[in-house]
Length: 345
Image (cartoon, rainbow, N blue to C red; front, side):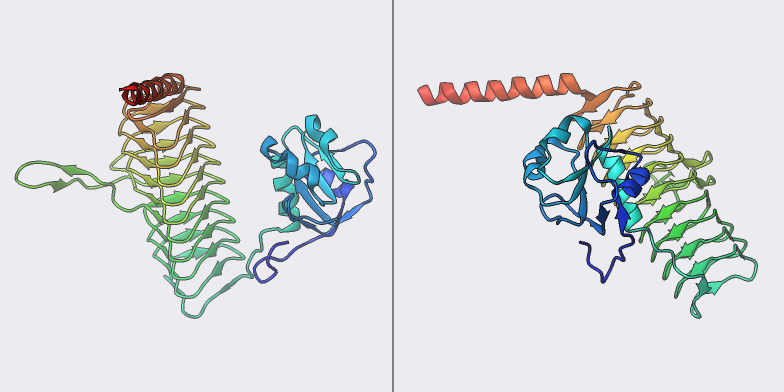
């Protein structure tokens, strides 16, 4: 189903193999030996394709689908069309992610050094590294095994990059210690000066930014995102966190483990986010705030106060979600009432 100019499909796989890959169960009556050669969306998949249903909004598409197989929640398995082979899982989307990865494993480039790459003599590169054309690796930098440094990327002096990392084309990294399996997308900026000034009527005096950026294992940072180094304390991105494109993270910020930060979020200096915090697109977090573990911040929220663990906040200024929604409902009702009164005049 994917364009073969850009993606190479693996397989085929039997339903039994896919069940093992997906950590799902073969539904009763399904042929475990049935073979599938690709994945595809419900609306486009054919008899040899495997799909998934995770959102009830697509039940009608599921019922009409020509897909040969599908992973689905047990409560919706009875809605499958005749002849569709099913895997059942309590988390179909996660199961499908494993299946799709098996059909389309991430290709890893062959090791090698492009003739136009510039690598300082004191830099250390681990076994199996790939350095593409125009890339620059500075003095005393340490690059782990099987790392891939993309075209025109710049790794600054002293930077440490762990095993199996990817630095995308035209990205730049300085003043950073980075763990294993970290993926920096094209155009990422890591470790530049934080925005720190002693402000005054005679001018704004730059405060030296003497910290680092610490990125733990299994972090993904989207294209053109910027993460400033700390002013003294380090800026820290916790293990497993996923950061979207065009995010700005200020100096001294600390993200916990497995946070999700969506596109165009701005997090001001010295804010602290706990583990598994989710921040929606274009939200803003003021400096020095603390957001507790498991909190959820809606898109376009402007936070000016701390957020308790597990809370959901929305609006400008940010407030508990139920309070925000109640205010929006009341405002809408007042507007509707005002329009009605005006029409009666």
